Image (cartoon, rainbow, N blue to C red; front, side, top):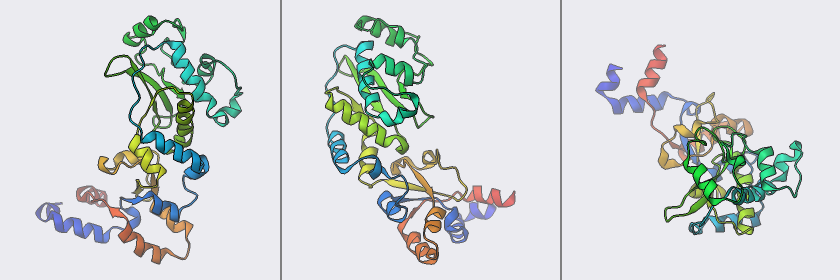
Amino acid sequence: MAEARRDPVGAQANLLRRLPLSMRRGVLLRRDVKALLPEWLPIERELGSKERKSILEILDRGDPDRIADMTAERFFNYCRVAYQANPRTFRGLGFKRGLAGRDYYRRYADGRDGGLLALDPRSAKAFRHWFDSQERLGAHPWEIYRGGNSTHIDLSVGRHPAGGWSVSLDAFSSSRLGETCRIALALDKARLPFCLAHRESYRKRLREEDWVGIVPEGSQIRYAWQDFPREYDVADCIQLQWIFEAHPGRNRTLMSKLRHAIAWLPEQVSAHLRNEGA
């Protein structure tokens, strides 16, 4: 530890020389990951070329105009379109076409509606009072597709900066990207104004221009994207070992290429020294 304090640059260089690539963190472009792991997160199977083109056009637009008034009925109309966009998601849950949005919401949303279902469906005043009250605090009224911390889909209502309301479609996980894009396409077709969250991240993922995180062997993958610097905008991660396992017999060649293709992140010398001393 004392040597690292005396010569931090030398300690960093020495660590990087000794540390196997499989134990380092870095980023690699999605298109390069897909070239090496074509079966990994196959977005192209979720969305056809026409759908990808249409969603990219939506992503390139500006935000829609404000919505003058919001009611529970109007929100549930959004929900009806959102649920009907992905019948396969609810195939094992008795999905039926033609139901009212309120009925879909009652069946498939998170369940912690915070009193939304009890509102007078056509009263803008009732919705406004509920929105500004404490009743919905701690509830999940906007979680229309159930999931974990980063794997659910939200369709949320908020105040528009210019007055009135706005509706936001929000799902970060790539495991729900196909479903979210189909919801966006359906809302757009129904002429229901909405904003799509994570717009730039979606655009890059669909074009395979975003950074995929490389994490050390044995690391958790699900939330590993949170550990990368924000400027890389990492949404998904892999372990380097997956690439080597997919290409047996090519490890030496791949090792040489990946050593230079991956943008490696600095390592915390002190953390490694503590681990070695443990």
